[in-house]
Image (cartoon, rainbow, N blue to C red; front, side, top):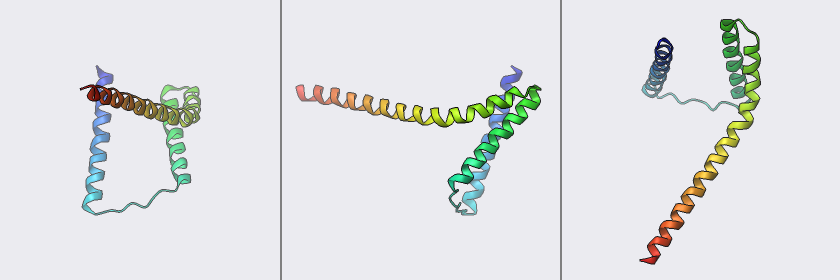
Length: 108
């Protein structure tokens, strides 16, 4: 119960921060500049290192940081594969449904 309350509080805080950021950006008509891919990769790596460091300090085990750092290349390889596979499966399902409905419609 206490853990669910903690995670719901963190989620609500992140949601409120995101909504506030969007509202401020729209009110000031802020036009963000595109981020270069190198900076984006550096920010993601820094965030993973920071999150892993915080978790390993809280858990008092350096191996937690190792698992966070190990998860970064795994995520880089697996996320695109999952997205491509899901997209291909969705297209295949839609094509199959369209084929079935067209065939059913042509019999009438």
